[in-house]
Every structure is written in structure tokens, then in C-alpha cells.
Image (cartoon, rainbow, N blue to C red; front, side, top):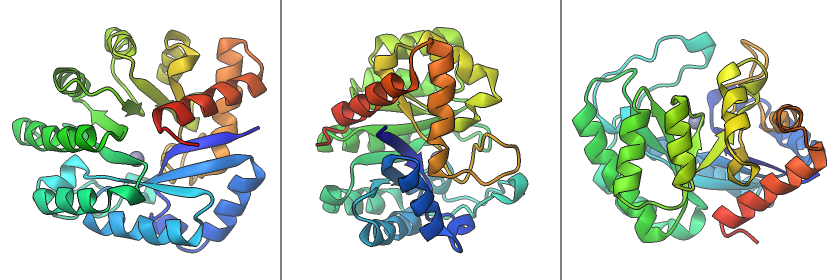
Length: 266
Ligand SMILES: [Zn+2]
């Protein structure tokens, strides 16, 4: 089986000690490509170094996370020991840097709207619009995380006529899932699907041709409190196969094809 993890954070401090083993386990599990996403200036540079070490399996996407983009003090709390520091960043400068380095990345993101930790809705929307514009200009897929701002995110993407959209860890309600489906957006499904009914419902609603797999490692593990890793894509494939009542091999093949299609990957 050829498996794909379209969204992980391999630069996270939780992988400092064991990244080589994590990559080895991913290879053993059949993972062909891991897209590791930056969230701010320093992680965008950090992931490039990881890609240099594992060029055959690790690809990158350059991100600007909405909370880092706000340039304010925001405390994400402890988060099971997975919390990271928010980094104040200059969005315009970073967008310029991304454009300059466009050939090194497969996608733009993680980006989006996060209204859970910030009420600065309009400012977040203005910044997200700039990122959407760049993704369109570069003709790259955009990996979107919207938290408590799912409706606003879809509105903006639709209005901007953004076509290559991947909704990562999408928590919007049924009507929004259907709307995004009709717009041709992709949904990437994390291993936490085994214990979250929401994703099981989402997979039942969305056609296989619009489904991708991700891990968001080290977050969203199938086992509470544990560190997630790319090899766990296997868990997601199993669960999707069960929900769709289609053999695992077929699910894996379709998802890998979806990946090649949206990322124009050969
Ligand atoms: Zn993420």
C-alpha cells in the first residue's frame, strides 16, 4: 500500500529526540510522502532542514498560522504537554519569503481562522485573504485550519474562487461539509477518527474522491495523551475502509491518487 500523510508538524519539539525512528516507522508502514507544515517564520525554515535530511519522503508546506500572524500575546495553555509557543511574525515579509521559495514547497498552509483563542475576527480574515491570494497566484493547494470560524473560512475561500482547497481537521457542521463538498474541496482525515464521531460522520458524507489522510503529528493521536506520528495513517485507512465498506487497499489507492491529483505530484 502507498500511504500519504498530507499534514504533520515534524519540527515540533516532541520529535527532537526520535525523528529518525519516526521516519523509519513511517516508511515501514508504507508512507510514501509526509507533508510537514510550518506555522510561522521559524518553523517554515525549520521544516526545510528536515526536508533536506529526508528528501525522498518529507515535503513541505509553508504556513502562517492565524494566531502567530496577529502579533499579540496569546497563551495556548498546557494542551497535554503539546503546546507550542506563538511567535509574533511579520505576515507581509513572510509572504514575500514564501513566494521567493515557492519551488521548495508543495502547498501553502497551515493557515486559516482560529476564533477559539482570538476574537480578532476581521484582522484574521484580512490576513487569511492575503494568504489565499498568494496560494492562488502560485497555483498551490492551500491547507486550511478553521477553528470556530468554519463558516467564515468557507465564505472567504468560495468568494476568492480558490479551487485547490484542503480542509484539515474540519469541525464544521453537516451543512457546511456538504457545501465544501459541492465546491470540490478536499477533507483530510486524522487518526483521531477512531474516537471522534464527528470525523466518522464526515467520512460517511464525503465521497472517497475528496478524501485525504493526515496525522497532524504530534497532535490528534488515536490514543488520548499519546504522541501521534505519520505511521498512524494506517489507523485512519482502516477506519475509512470500515465506514465506506470498501477494502483497505482500494481506499489507500484512491487516497494516494487524490493526493497526486491535487498536488500535481508525479
Ligand atoms: Zn496542524
